[in-house]
Amino acid sequence: MTSSTKSSRRQLATVVMLVLALLGGLVRWLAPQPSVARDLGSLLMVLWLPIVGNIIGWMMQRAKAPRHVLQGFAPDAVFEPSARIELTLLAADTPRESRPIRAGYFDGALVVGSEGFTARLAVPVEGEPVPEVPCVLAVQFLRPALALAQLTPDKRFALLAGRTVLGTGYVLPDGPPHEVPKAQPASA
Image 1 (cartoon, rainbow, N blue to C red):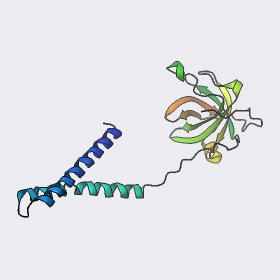
Image 2 (image 1 turned 90 degrees about the vertical axis):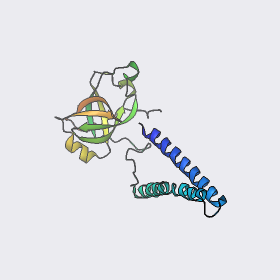
Image 3 (image 1 turned 30 degrees about the vertical axis):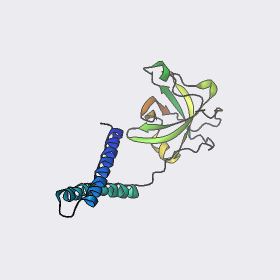
Image 4 (image 1 turned 180 degrees about the vertical axis):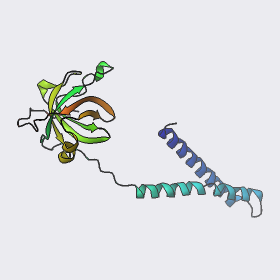
């Protein structure tokens, strides 16, 4: 069962219990004082109490939830290369996904073991990566000191876009490039 199915079922249950509670209030108001109908109205009104508890719990959970600020590169940030990498894209199962990296700036993560580092690749117009063919690209890390401490030239990394592994590679030993190929911002 998906979370959207659970959510819609919870919303439906909330609405049904609210309607029953309102009907119980109406029956209680219209029924004579000592009657079974008045007691049933009271019982229907009590059905709303668990929903109130759920609403209070949801509000407290929302209040305690940390405000998650997404970290990444600002769209207008200048590209400052941290290193050069040799990247080999993996072959894709479908032709539509055979060229996942286009010319421009490509945001992703370079992963070594269980550690990932936010990175931005500068892909020149004439040098778009082709699957299974190694290519050299300039890379900028969000936190270069942390990334370059783990991404030594002898360690292989995987390039991720979201949860999808796009390729593998390694950092070249000659350090950051002095001349970065011109990359146009990727159009969405």
